[in-house]
Length: 230
Image (cartoon, rainbow, N blue to C red; front, side, top):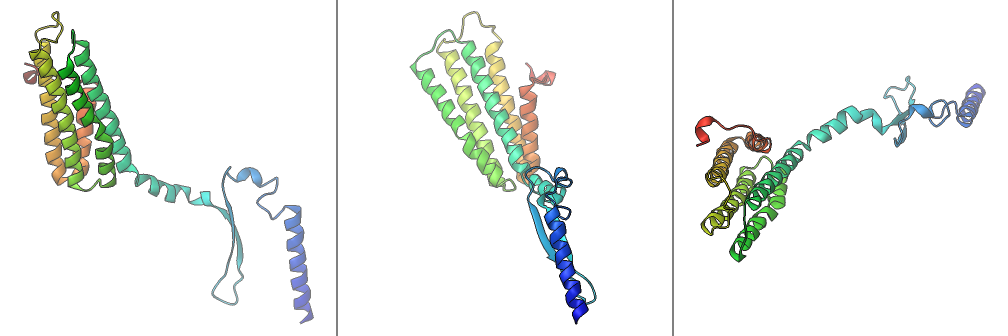
């Protein structure tokens, strides 16, 4: 009995000595540079089920599982990232479309101002439709609602240009092909969006990728097939 008491005493004394000297502590001057900044140090004791085995003192950090848990969490954010790209491209394309129309106007009137206000009203729905799509990425109704929002934006922008033409608000020196080109560009874009939405009814993720591809083609002004230009 006495040897066991002495062994336990010396074990406790040595543990206290090393802990106090910093040799067994992860916060010592030698081990501290190895711990990532901002990491939480977690201590625990591991017991073995068999009585003949000895337990182990475990010191670890939360960063040890960075490659697994964090990457799994980041992959779950992929739908939100895709819809953010979608929203940014949509806003940019329609803003450029509106600016192109305004640059070719000689003057404006009250009715055109209300039509552009209607266009901006459809634009304000994009954050809601984008959030709906990001939260319910696998649901077809969310993609259809987003496509309907794009359709409303395109229709409002088309009405703005048609009214500008009929009211004689376009600059007199504008080229004759400007009007048909603007109308055709909007119509073709909406037709492509509609095709992507139809694909999205079967595979929502594929539909979103197609819409992004269409928007990238318009954002970088990729050439259309020759038969669509006239």
